[in-house]
Image 1 (tube, rainbow, N blue to C red):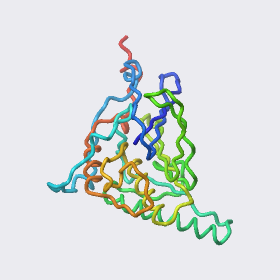
Image 2 (cartoon, rainbow, N blue to C red):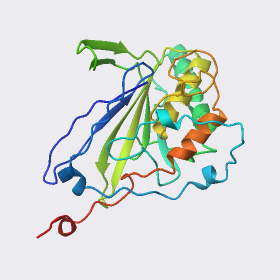
Image 3 (cartoon, one colour):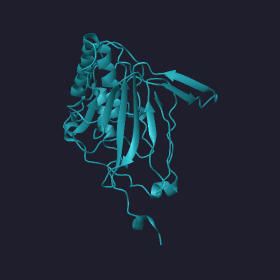
Image 4 (cartoon, one colour):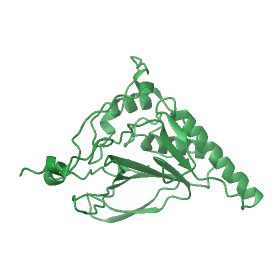
Length: 261
C-alpha cells in the first residue's frame, strides 16, 4: 500500500516541503491535512487540462478502475501539468569493470523500456541532468523504512527490497508550486524484474499514489519478479486521477491577496 512521511519546514510563508513515500507494503494511509492558515497561503485547488494522450484513450465497457484506492497528497493529486515529463536515470559508470558495466547497462535498458511503456499515456523524455528532471531514478537499494503502526503504536521497520518512490514539493523561480519524484531502484534484480519494478514505480511517480487490489494490474501492491504490463485498469485509473483537482502546477497567491487588511 502507501506510507507517508511528512516533514514541514517553516519559512516566512509558513510552508516549504512535504515528503511522501510509496512502498509495496501493507500500511495504512494517513494523509496529513492542511490547516486553514496554511491552506490560505497556497494556490487554490483546480483542475488542469487532461493530457491529450489520456483524453484520446477510449474506455471499454469492461474496463474497471481502482480510483477508490488512490489517495491525494495534502496539496491535491500528484498530477503533472507540463509535458513531456523530464526523467533522469542513473548512467553507467565508465570506470566500472566490464562485468559491472554490463549489469549497469542492462539496468538502464530495463528502465528505458519502462519509460517507453508509460510514455504513450503520459509523455516523457529522458534528460541527462538530475537537477532539472521531474522524476529521478537512482540505481541503488531502497533504504529501510521506520514507521509507527497506527493501530498498535509499535515501531516497525520495512525493507522495500526492489523499489521505492518518494516525492517532495518546492517552488520554482516563477513561484509555481511543483513536485519532484525520486525512485530508488535495486541494482540486484534481473532484467525482467528490474523492468517490472521500474514500470510499477513509474506508475506511482506519474500520479497513481495507491495500489490496486487486483493482482492482474501493474499497480497491485505485491512485488514480483515476473513480467507485468500496464493494464487498461491502470490507464483508466490514471485518466481519472488527471481529472481531479490539485494545487500543483499553480502559482502561489500574492501576499496582498492573502491578507484581509
